[in-house]
Image (tube, rainbow, N blue to C red):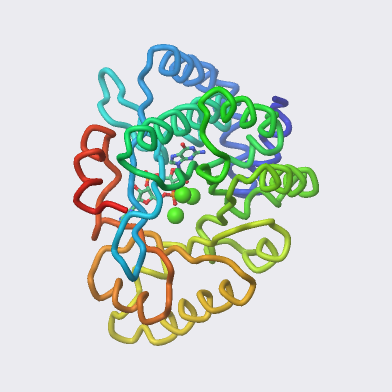
Length: 288
Ligand code: C2E
Ligand code: CA
Ligand code: CA
Ligand code: CA
């Protein structure tokens, strides 16, 4: 992975300030230290996947699972991905961590399926860097063969950030993955500056409405937000996408989304992301 490529990606995503900051950070070899920390974490088995169910709005049953990475640091405790994914991207470690996530998620889903516990697709978050620089098509093919997971039981959640650079290659790769039968979801929809363009360009199956829209649902004076959310959902349906709302925390939000014909919901109202041990106890209560 070329440092210059990553710097370019960062600069486009976060602006020039980040580029200067990250340059200084690298210069201070802080980056190197963190990279070693992440490498040790990967080798030392310190990463774990947590799972959060996706719930069908009408039946209230589990129709999917999102895998979310956690770093169980021996001294610092549970570290959120928001605090280490950017560093993993910065150092290129995201490629190895990303492969690990895909491998673990596929393996776990196959176990649930074989046990008859759960028969739904598993979703993993993909960094744009994995689409630009890794050989993601090959590595996913290998993981599917090795784990025996059917391709349509794997979904990749990608943000529109993938189109800021190497756009043609990223879209080609998503297309190739989709041809294998893997599902593609556009994550954090509405958050970025080119959401509608990403809808036009990405080969996708579903769209996840960003939590920012869900937070504002059915609160006083939120008519504008309600209308936007409602029309994002109908726009997505018009172009053949399923719609998932993320960050649903209240019954009010859920009822709003149901009235807007949102297909699936995900959020603390149903469950936080939880470790596998807890997840397998939850599933029979909200079985498919
Ligand atoms: P995301 O993909 O948008 O995931 C949703 C985030 O919202 C998760 O935070 C989830 O725990 C949280 N969440 C879910 N329901 C609710 C709710 O009702 N209320 C609130 N307040 N929050 C809710 P988390 O797990 O900390 O992950 C943060 C971000 O880190 C993710 O955002 C995703 O972009 C990234 N991420 C997580 N796992 C991975 C991974 O394996 N690979 C990569 N590349 N990125 C990951
Ligand atoms: Ca996601
Ligand atoms: Ca989000
Ligand atoms: Ca995200």
